[in-house]
Image 1 (cartoon, rainbow, N blue to C red):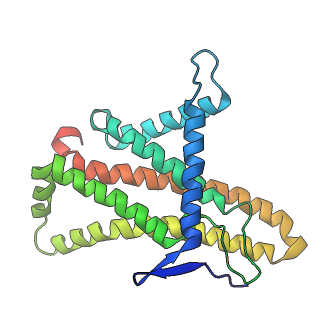
Image 2: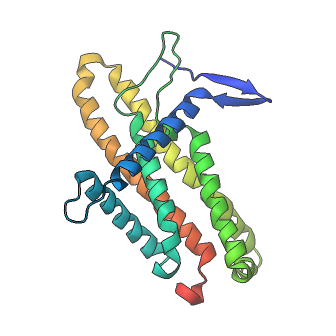
Image 3: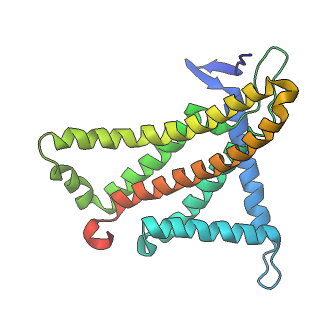
Length: 233
């Protein structure tokens, strides 16, 4: 059965209240996890959560080091941590259950199952990459556009435009499709219990992969605008 999302109109714009709710919930989850993992840190007797957070830091350091490099990448570790934790937790929120009112209005879902949310994340990271290129690598940032001659320039511009589109739609499409499949499986009643557990396990894997891919590509795009080939690539 088709569900609807709650919304309001302000200044001629439509605001999805369920998406805003889930953005806030995801932010709170990430904040609690970060504070809990960082507080009462111990070198001799670290907690399981501290060990997990340290593993995430090392994992993100690996992503940043392999894309931007250790020389330029250190300031972007916090960005990578924020992205991978926020996207992964956001991907997971719609898996265990959903909240739908009697009039078929859906309030609880993964925020990343909304194209507006993934597009906003993409605009932020792509905008940041170009801003860094313009302000920190100005000469080479603008010079590389003149390296393309004739028909290659339009093709390069298409590539530049396609990057944010593919980044946003890849994340949205995978998470939205996963939630649709869960709804279909639930419609099978008792016969869907076993497939539901299997699909949710697979969805956790997909959600983790998509968080990794988004974070990795963000660092790649920053590297392409920030680091000149002769200096680091």
